[in-house]
Image 1: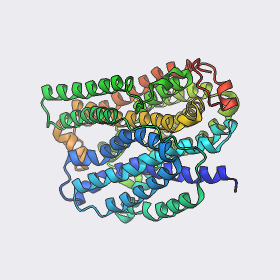
Image 2: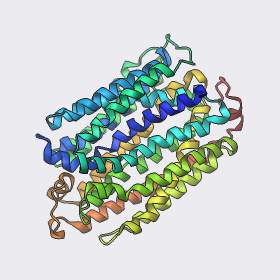
Image 3: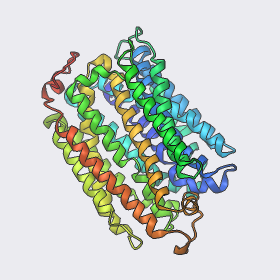
Image 4: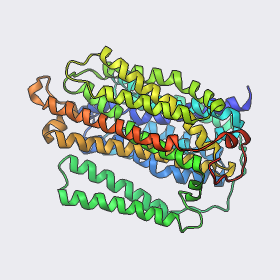
Length: 486
């Protein structure tokens, strides 16, 4: 087998597993709440949010570390940490323990996410990167959706601990194959340094924003404290950008934003993630809570059309973008996803599986059309020695967008529902009697989340359409820094 296919197969397994574990826990949350001691609603939400948050925080640094010490070396380390973290999660005895062990798992996932795209870009020629990154990118998005299906099956048949233990044998084999089969094609740049001030300000900003949103939504934070903590988080992120303009080796390399294709691609990536990040979260509670009260297995199967349509179109759009450029596919993908979210604003108490197939297929097709070409254009636009940082920036913005999307979806639901009803929905204790929860208000909140998603996707059309020409960058694979967007 050609080396490039060895790279693609291993990195696709790695990113699939890391992405799958973002959502595999989501559909099992009500079961975990019932069976795991000391699991409050706040702990339950942070089992989910903590993983996404830590992955977002470490990605930029781990991309930098890959550039400094070897992308393959840290990718293999990430696989080992992720596998060990999965085993620890399966053995958790309390809710807070599971939150901590999910952080270990997220650390490994950070190494996988940050270095996979750079390793692929090193191994493939410029005219093949779109297809290769397309397959890998589809594994990220498909993993997030497929995790719901697999999580439902495993939770129903083998219990919630199995959603973590299933990673252990696969991870052990994949770690060994990565260690023995992958090799460094990039010369490490050891003169780079870690940006500690940037790391601290970025982590503090995201954490403060998410803590303020979740605590306020659960009635554990007064309005004044909520506003203060939220503004503190925003201020910390502003400080982060100020720091990045002044340090010698910034965590977020703002000089890359001079590349028009790169800046447009990451802008569209962030808005797309912010729009779609809460999709699975909202749909799981719509299907398992009022008004449907489906089992985890049935709820997961309802979401198959999303992952199926995404898996079919993703590699195709990536291959076509190698030939025709990323812009038409990125724009079309955002439009198709937006149409799917608009359609979802019509769902209600009587909605059936067949009513959901149409909008689910549109959402999945849109994700697949957008993700692969946009990622390939982003990675091809930067010099080879900056690909680790570029991959880290791109995936950080994806995970940050998804994490913030989850937080604000919780906030929307909290404003629409009484705290008792919201808690009952999240813990899976809502009665089958429609009078037990404000069903109409819950559905209205669901509609509002999807309306905001559609609006964000339409806003993302601006950077997607204005990315400028890319043919020369994609064709030559140059190490030059194209500041004119070429």
